[in-house]
Length: 288
Image 1 (cartoon, helix red, strand yellow):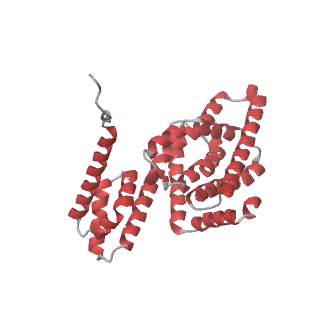
Image 2 (spheres, rainbow, N blue to C red):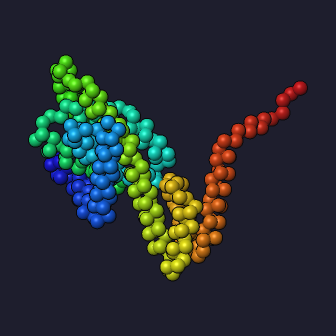
Image 3 (cartoon, rainbow, N blue to C red):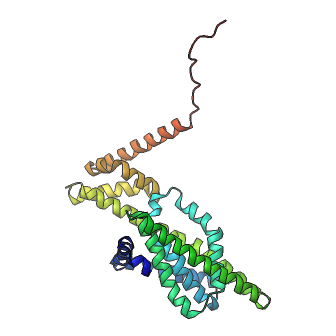
């Protein structure tokens, strides 16, 4: 963190993180995330997947996994098949490592210091990727994160090996499964918040390019919501290509027509890509 503060790019990244965290919309989003996690815990306890001994592990997961997913919610619109990718990611090695780290944390004092540092570095890494910052700063932050995680994994493996004969195996299974089911259960919330952010940013951009009355702007929004519903990535791509034409639309019918034309063009493009290439014509006559 001190090394990051010594560079201009690192200071800009930290400043951007803290500016974002004090905005009221971000505060509401994190408050709702906390309420969602509480609901997850209540349901998990009813299903015998959670008990009070997992409280610390749940807090660690919330800081290191759920918060980073929420900070990176813009990926909901940018990435195709976001939910599918995140479900696959939740069942891969990083989540297993997170569960292992939850089992063998290196003491309360170290944990209280480490969690804010990991969250800040993770948030900085996301901000630095999305903005124009020097490559050395991005590489430094990512390398620092990797080193911290490797050190934690080494500690957890050594501690687990020494304590293995004395461990409660049932509690061990619950702790290892915690990160998996919490991550899967929080994805709908992150997707809905990201979907809201995708629509809101698009509506702001459209309204900046027009002087239409409120009635027309509301009609455009309703038409877009009805047309795309929960398809965040398709809506994001549509706005990227048709923002100016949508800002000039004055009715629901016109917006729906633009959406139909966009989808027809995308379908035609996909069919062209799938169509087999015709063999090249011969360059000259063959002698009989």
